[in-house]
Length: 180
Image 1 (cartoon, rainbow, N blue to C red):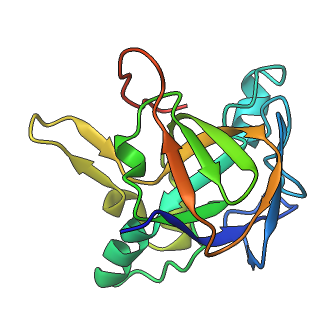
Image 2 (image 1 turned 180 degrees about the vertical axis):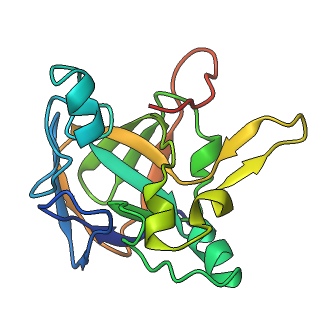
């Protein structure tokens, strides 16, 4: 299966869900133009309260469409953008990528994976039981966070549904994703 972008979303306000768009613009070192979480320093309200000068490692949020399919199969209404993501992908094992992986999106844009999204209680405000549905346990009992990954923008460009995704593995040892 080819790796593609299924949907793109952004929202200027700090609201949980983001409306889907025909296209979004990624700006190098900044994030999604017009999105509340774009910026050089942290933009998530809980993180601003702790250290407003910290670098923004969460400029772009990606979720795999396969997770939305799974959740819909379990009775949740989770259309693209519902979980606050900017990009929905299909055909990419987002959770299996290593820290530092570069994703080339469409003709020009590139982002670098910084880590996992740590799901929060706001998911249950959207739909009861959703937080538990995006958490799992691996064979060793370790917590598996399925609610997507975070990235920073390395190269500006416009992206839209249907655009191809090319994966560039980082150099050196594989470092599994951890929450950022």
